[in-house]
Image 1 (cartoon, rainbow, N blue to C red):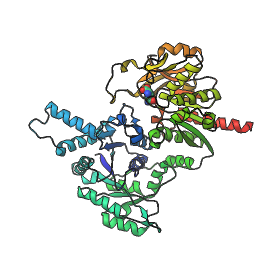
Image 2: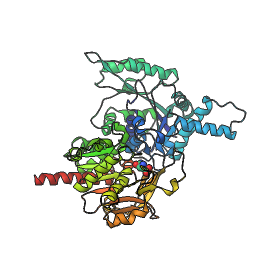
Image 3: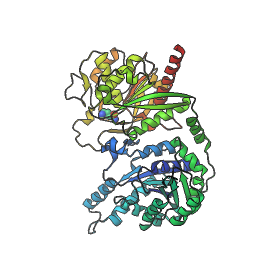
Image 4: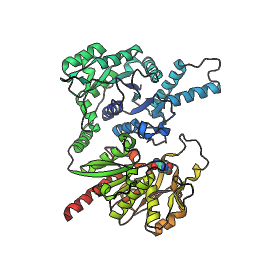
Length: 540
Ligand code: GLN
């Protein structure tokens, strides 16, 4: 019998529901349970693929090619699971199914309504995921804040789930804010009370309250929250900010959340393997080395736009016992004509981030040129690989005017062009080359060495590729194509022998990095950055 945990949020948005959901999953995974996370998002977009990263943060891509909310990235990283299409349910997807069913005539004669048709479709998707993933526990995070109009059908659906699956098999966790106000930093419980009233108004009584707070909650405050919100005092869990998000499960475990959840759901775990997670948190908190990696992108003012990349860099520090600082660089600031050394001279490595469209491209090209010429360790991701090819074509192969067809209609040398299967595609939603694809790495290359294998798979999200007409020219001048699709049609990875670390990948390795399994391409970059620091120190 699958157990269901529903995580809602109150008072303010961005309260950390995603990290709480992910952490809860970690506590259950430590106890040996199979956990299927799912994000229920009230927005009407069918998926996150068409949303601007400025507004919505990164688009996270799953193995099977779903373009989803960045919270799924947290789930994968904390729980070490693989999400799928079914792990993301949006209002758009739900209505698309209901309306298609209505057009087919599935409800013939009936009036199609939010209750029961829309709510049934939401429940069907949750239960299907449980079955597909043979989950002991489904953890569903409901996007938005309780009180939002658009999340009502989702809240009604999870209320009904308590009846369908049984009270003993469902648990409601509400994440809320307990602010302090005034000169004496008085702890205020009223916003929490109100958000719990809102939940109860629609028939949901929370079992656990996670109270985000800047201070330790005094006992009398916990008792007050307990009394007014109808939640037992031991289920009022305080949640203070911690130095690394990966410490949140450790904090929750210490506060007894794992045990409490298991007790309430009638789970009787036979083990609780927490040591390895605690060890990695310990390494993160006590680094012996430090380096700074510049990430050049076009959405750097929103830290969430490159979430998986910044997390992959954190993970990459773990095997090296190193703290990795990120220096965010907005690509068009590199186009002002100022000396690039003043921006990149002090960093120890460079990532050129994925992206779309023309803005900032020339700045990225300048950054790659600097890395290539100065021996600065470099990792180019997706657009980053394409930029590296354009730079190499222009400045090494002498193909003046080389460019991507994405940036210019008929470039003098279209070294990056549209994938053949993309010709004629006009729809923007879910129409890129998406999800996991195999790649063969060439024996003896840095790529094969880093992956310790010649057969790999990585996730993709792109429309353009390296133009095969220029492969020979690029290779003649020293660029090594280290990874290709099994049919040799697509360039998947490039590198530059003689350079300390110069790797480009058409894929998105950041999506597969986990704190307990840092990604080899990121770990390699950080390793090279640390070596560079060491070499500089020995010269000085
Ligand atoms: N815009 C490029 C393409 O579509 C790169 C995409 C990306 O970086 N994800 O091929």
